[in-house]
Length: 504
Image (cartoon, rainbow, N blue to C red; front, side, top):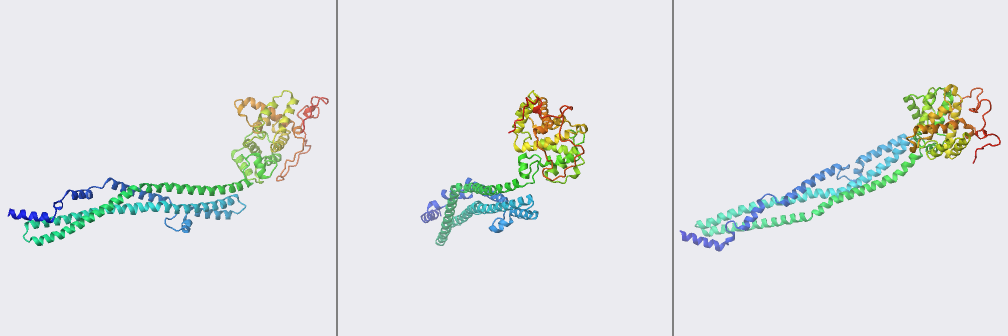
């Protein structure tokens, strides 16, 4: 019996080489490689697939248009397009007479152009980034991972074929019909070889795909560089749209005459409104001339905050419908005082501040007046015209000082700081500066007709009704001696030594 077994083994070794009998080392290597846990590169691929999928999902959620839609349909569905249409329609409803209407139409057109840029940007982004990311996460990497599963299945098929073949070889050794068993083993050997070839082919393809993925990581990373490049290009084009529109819309804003007067520079307000005298100043003066000249403590007694706020808002709207405020002269005086205080540049200018202070420091009264006149004559044209208008009114107000208690000195105290402003270099010398302010403003009010000899028409714009002057009204001031008519300041030293005003 033992001789027969040895004989059959020798025959088997001749038919099947030793290296394919049993489970050789090579086949063990294939089995281990294809049945073990995923390799580092496979784990990396899976991680790349997950992050690519999540990034693609987040990017799609950032899009304002519908992904995959045609350009025209996409443009219509953008929120910016809806905003543009609403703004244009609203602007048309408000009409050309409304600054808001004009602005909305211009902005609506700009928003439509921005929507167009956004639509093209999203289409480009979809082509350059979203589609490649989707291809990577949903097709390329899953296909490679499917090959890994296919390889594992082929290995199982190979293992099954090998098991059947091994059983057949054992049957040859122990069986009696050697020829039939050998033929069956030959068939199983062919199946085993075919299974092995399939394993090798799949393994080679998987390895090639993995190596290809690893080598293309730089290409995949380029998607995110492209993302930023596309975004930069979109923002540059959008900025170009805005920079083209902004000068136009700012020009319309600047050309609009109905702009608040309070807090606006004097020159800008006069230019915008086409006026010679600031509207708040003329309106307040005209109202005070009508009802406030006898009011005690004018400019000194504070007005009600709500009434003052309402009057300032009405003046900012350039309205002439101010009848309700005539009965509250303190609110009117407060509005005039607020206008002077809120000027970005005080009426008597920061530039001449030091000159005003130096002029007020001259000890000789007549020379001090001459020095003040010289500084006054240096004022810009608009500042000088409005100061002249105001001083003429204040001089008129001071004529009724017995009733209103507002002498030139008191007026200078309450209004002087608003006219002159404060110098930063003298900020810590408020008390001393206030003395200078009174020394500057008081004599200008006292000698208003000398500083500004021309007659004044208070109703410059014709918007207001001129009050009827009271009987025996005297337009000339007399704050010198009551025993002789007030003379011009330059003649006080005597007729022969008169210091005339240096007219230019």
